[in-house]
Length: 262
Ligand SMILES: [Zn+2]
Image (cartoon, rainbow, N blue to C red; front, side, top):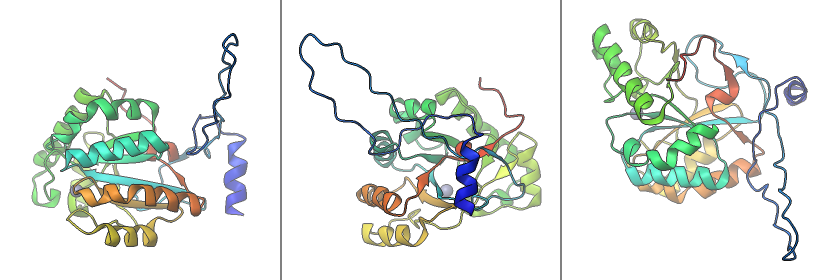
């Protein structure tokens, strides 16, 4: 019934164009004199966006087949580039919770920017330098989020608000209030981790993917170590075989009073 209602919602949703992976149509052979006719991109509407439920987000509300992979940090520029290449190639949608302190986000801005502009990738705030926010003063919390917001705006022309992920998942009411004072009203944690913030093997990572890449999950991964690059096509196969649909947070949630794009 959940699937039915999710599908029913499509009929009232504004059509948002998405190209599912594997939807490319072979180009027909053309005679030299014929004019190529553009193949229309299939329009597959997502369920209507829903209001943020409030509190800390750890999963996607309701029933459905959506999967929100979130990719944090960005300590390895080649891994960021690999994610971008994968997303460009497959249409896999994901949200990056980036730390501006890592050069990756500047070095790979050229390949990421088109993905951000098309909505395949979303950028959100993981603080500038990845501190434990509960150990900082209110003004230091604000500075961490604001300097990262400024970095995202300057480099990509978008805001990361209202979504922030506290490093290590450490936050409390005081941290949340300080974050909210600069527009970061939505803490985002996760339900399931690829457990690759540190170095693990590709086999281990595929095991965590098997375990957690499930419907309506927000899953955390990291762009920190190369083994994940060996797993991305496996992850894509899992998504297809489990009939999941990858989404960014913006695909799912309607944000009111969002800061205007600069
Ligand atoms: Zn992190």
